[in-house]
Amino acid sequence: MNDYYEKINLPKIPLEVLDPLDKILTFNDEFKDIWSDDTFSQTYANYTAPQKLHDYIQTLFDFPVKVNYQVIHKKLPKHKDIGIVGKKYNYIIDTGGDVYTRWYNDDTVVFEIKSKPFEWHTLQIDVEHDITTPSHTRLSVTVCHA
Image (cartoon, rainbow, N blue to C red; front, side, top):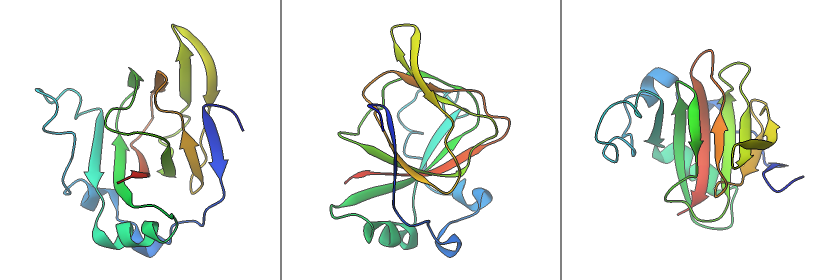
């Protein structure tokens, strides 16, 4: 365990409650209306999870949850997450290849990790971090307090 990333012991999400990428891409992208051009949406999207996935995830947590599919197509630049307070929980479905999440102090990488698929982890999101370039679409389920 460290201050940036922690693997947590929650059950794997059953495949029958997960959606295929082509279907996910038809869901509501919650970030689409935030950005004035399509540049960011060609890199990152945050799709509202359907009720069946939300209902399953809710059984794993003792607080009200907000559940999304996170889709990353390209390198995600250094950023701090917006609109989320506290921890963010991630469950990687497809890593996108040899991809690292890196945290920074100014321009110096202070920690990096390569997440494994089908494992839960938490991220520190109020420190600048990025995602290295995926070779194909990176797909995960994200969970935060509702």
